[in-house]
Image 1 (cartoon, helix red, strand yellow):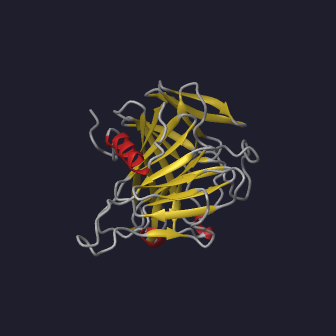
Image 2 (cartoon, one colour):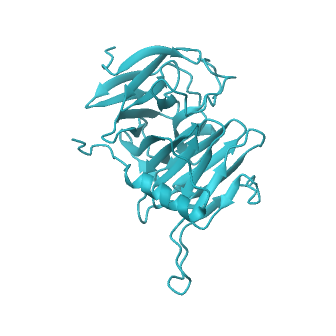
Image 3 (cartoon, helix red, strand yellow):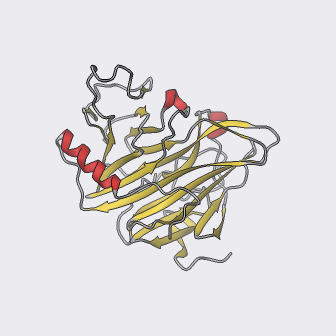
Length: 314
């Protein structure tokens, strides 16, 4: 199989075959023995901003699903019978119109996953296009879900809706979604007026929240760098989990930065997609003060847009 000039086949974290992509000052490593998983993301020659779970790293062919870490394409709703299928077999890849495409074989429900990656026109960024094919004979209802497991020790920052006095607007601004194991008094959270913060803590167990983030961005600060994820928002669309297009889950070994597409139906022999753009910014730290942090985050995001599949980037 031909390898693009910016890609090498390398061993990584116990897997013998991984695709290493280098461009825009960034280094991405995608597993080829399992997955597809983007298992490494960082500046070239620098540390990994994504999590890798050492207890399962390098394993292949197992009959059960493993949370290897990194980034994967997931599906909502979170039905363990359909989404928790093992992705422990080799994948294929190809180059197509400037994208590198990583392809999983169809699963037993006849769903086929692809992750497409290309260089962003903005320095320090990559565009990630997720695609689900329905290879079966019947329509399927789902939502595409981009799930990224970040390395330990960092802090998530998510924008709140614009503050509007009740005298100017009586209707609600957005849903804030909690899970049965979410404790709003958990010290990892700061529920600010302008931003929500969630800190990863290696001494604590699971917590999760979701929201409809109309701004379409979130950030995770770690290692003196900031990972920015851009994602879509469609006015009037129905999203999973009580209308959430963004969710974050954290436990002792990771913090997840997750974006979700709308609830959709995929007819037989058709596909649907979900786009993200990722950026890594060096030497940035979220300001402590709530208002300043919101301004800082908005400024970083304004310079780093979401690029959707098919858009002319020339």
